[in-house]
Image (cartoon, rainbow, N blue to C red; front, side, top):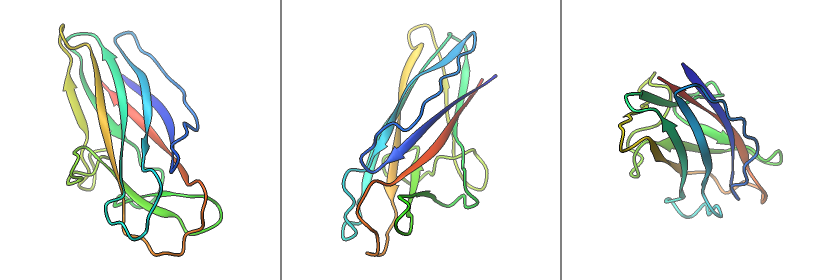
Length: 151
């Protein structure tokens, strides 16, 4: 079974769109977008965090993938329509050593075996803006990510 939830990322982190699909034994309850805050090109630590909340029946072994919409699996892009995009990565860990993707091309996925005492979990999504040039215009940058849950 595969669930999909599409959510948006913006620098001000407004939820752009959401579509929740539920199955008989697992559902995505909520996705909180990654919040990078205000972008500072002189700060090499532009990081943010968002969350995915899942509820699954005990015994479900779920895998959470973050789908790539572009051609490059090394990074994702935020766009505002006025300047070059901002490049970023989403990670399984807070140090951003493990890029969260679909498990292909060196990316990682999140897995969890649900138990009777832990049928609802909230999983953090860590994000990091990559080093950029200073030629970005002010405004909101956004991009959509598809969350896939397989079980």
